Each structure stands twice: as structure tokens, then as C-alpha cells.
Image (cartoon, rainbow, N blue to C red):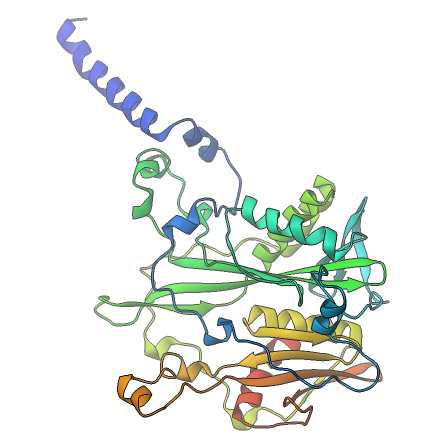
Length: 393
């Protein structure tokens, strides 16, 4: 073999070695990894200008009159016990709950399609562990409400959905910012104190980037359905962190099915392809749910979480969620311009409502009340019920 025939081979080997050195040892880890969720480092790569529903903005609380009947709200209990992260009226766990897996101090519970974790630890003990859990996942907490028992992460990209071919696993590590799934996820964690410990709920919300014109020269972020697989994945990982067994945690994910397929920014959207809203004339004044109070309460709470409503307080004993609603049709329009401000115009204040869950035998009734606990049927109330209808049917 001549020296000249060795040179091309040597050159190729050198180039290969150079590329592999850029990628580092983590390349081989990602090639053989079966991980379906990875938000590590995603915060630094988030798309700027991601618009989220207006309900997510913070607003100072008002001093509402306490509900009669001897019940106590989350914020009222927090005032008595300032250190309580999830000050909720103590309640018993649903009698119809079936425990699928138990491991030491934490177990997975399920009722229908709803899943959550139960631990004998108190909310005060669980709160710092939850904060550390999301940070370990690579997600930043942008909202913490210890007095209500909720925390929310930032919008982040699941990098595990990117194609893991050889080019992506090598050169792509150096130019990682050039790759995008066109999707963003965020999670809300809600904890409720029960007679035997703490119940932990995790809900997912998703956004996807779509083209808004046929020429594909403009994009916008739109809502996408909540992903049950991602919720189950996070529940299983949290179960492990809190002391659960690996086999039990894997069962959570296996029962949730397969993860949603990855999408990309090349997906065509457009005004005509958005999901049509239900006409308000078709929305009833109240909803009847074929569930007892315990399950109806959980389902309504999860639905409100998945739709991103700002829950300012809750009172399980009275069956009330206190929330603030801002009409999404007015998103970006509510802020007065310079001349309007000059003449004293102010941005409209988002309306406050109460979602009432009342037991009615083996069924439950869901109504929308105003801040004086009077039933309301205005357009905003019907929009809230319309969102709940699909989840509670």
C-alpha cells in the first residue's frame, strides 16, 4: 500500500476525531439514551416573545368576605400559619380512590383518568423538595404561591424531541441553538393538605409555533392540548425523588401511553385552521358532572390548571375555587395608549370569579359565581364553563 493511499484515510480519521472531540463524551450518552424528556439548558434557548394567555399575569389580592358556614380558605389559614406552603382546609382523601402502587412514604393514586401522588409528609416538608425537583429537571420556577399551594415553571423546550441522528449528536451539539422542535411546555404543581398528608397534582400546558401565512414568512405561538404522557412522566420522576420504587414509577408512564410525536416550526397553521370555539349560546348556565364531590373537585382543579387560570385561593370545604379571568380576545388590547393615559384612561381590571363545585347526590354541579357568591351567566362565565365542558364530559 502506497503512502499516498493512506493520506485520505488519515485525513478522514482526523476529521472524525475532531468532530467527536467537539461533541464530547455526552454524544454517546445521548445516542443510547431512552430519555423522552429533557429540559436541561432549555431556559437559555427559549424563543423570545412567547405570548401566553393573559390569565397568567399577577394581580394583587382583594379582601374578600369570608364564606359563611365555618369553613376557612387557603389564604386565611396561611395568615394563621405563615409558614404553611399549602394552607388548605384539611379534608379526607376520596373514598373511591384506588391506590395502584405504594412505596414507603409516597404512593400513586388514581381515580378514572386522573392521577396524583399522595405522601404522608406535610406540605411544609414537600414544598422545598418540589422546588428542587423542577430545578433538577432544568426548569425555572416563575411563580410560587405557597399560600395557595401552587408553583409554575417557565416555558421550555423538550430537547429530547429533537432527532437524535449522528449529525445532531455530533456537530449539532456545537450549534445546538439552530435546532428547535417548535414546541414549548410548562408545568403547574398543586398540593393540597389532606387528613393523612399531602396530595400532589402535576398538570401540563403546551404551545406550538405555527406559520400564520401561506407564504410562511410569519409565525405565532398557539395553544396545543395538554399531554397526559408528560404529566405521567413528571409524576413518575417525582415519585422516585420522594422515595418511590422504580418499578412503580415505570408503571405510571406505561399506563399513560406513548409520548406525543415531535412537531416542528414547519407545521402550517393559519387563521382558518385554528380550533373553532363553541358558540356561547350552546353553553349552559351550569354543568352537571356524573361524579361525587371528591372526584369532581379534583377534575375541576386539574382542568383549571391545564387551561392556565390564575387561582388566587381555594376553599375545599365550601367547594370554591377563587380565580381571575381575563378575556383572551382582549389580549394585547387592554393597555391604554399614551393619549388615553394622558386623559386618565386605565387598563380594565380582570374579572374575579368563583368556580363552585356542589355535591348533588352521586353527581355534582359546577357553576360560576361572582365575588359575592351570586350565580352569573355573562359571556366570561360561559367561556369558563365552555373550557371546563370538554374536560368534565
